[in-house]
Image (cartoon, rainbow, N blue to C red; front, side):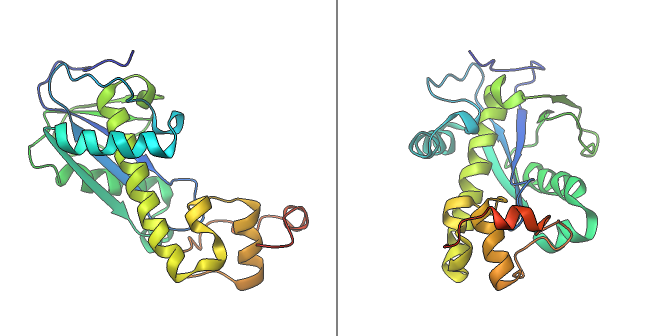
Length: 204
C-alpha cells in the first residue's frame, strides 16, 4: 500500500515527470497536493496502470486534490539546457503553478534542483511508494499522452499516438524516411545505428 505522507506537512506536494526518454515532444511534470490520509484503491505508479485506469485516476485526482498543476519544457529548451535541467525546469513550473504553496516537496527520482527555500526529499521509485508522487505520475503521463496525440494529427507518419515519442523502431524508421520535425529533440541521438534501422519494420 502506498503511503499518504512523508514529511507530515499538510501541504506536501508530490512531483513527477513523464517523457524524459522520448525523442520528440516536451518533458512534462506534475505537482499534486492530496488531502491528508487520502486513499484510492487504484492509485499507483502510472507505468503499472493501463490507459483506462490512468484516465479514471486522473479524473479522481483532479476532483480530489487540494491543488495540482502541470509544467512543461519544450524540445527547444531541452536542446538548449539538456534533458536533466529541462526536467527540473518543468518540475519548477508545475510547483509554481500550484494554487496553494507547498510546504514540502516529495520528488520522484534521485536528483532535484532546489525550488527556492522549500525543503524537499528525493525518493527513488517514489511513484510506487507515495500517493502524491503516484498522482503526479498519472497527471504527467496522461497530459503528455494528450499532447502527443495532438501532435500526431500534425505529423501522422511518426505514430506518436501509439509511441508517445519514445524511440520505438517505428518512430526511428519514420525519422530515417521523413527527417526530424521541430518537435524532435535534436540534441538526442535520433538515429543511433544502421543496424537498428535494418531491424525496424518496413512499413509504418
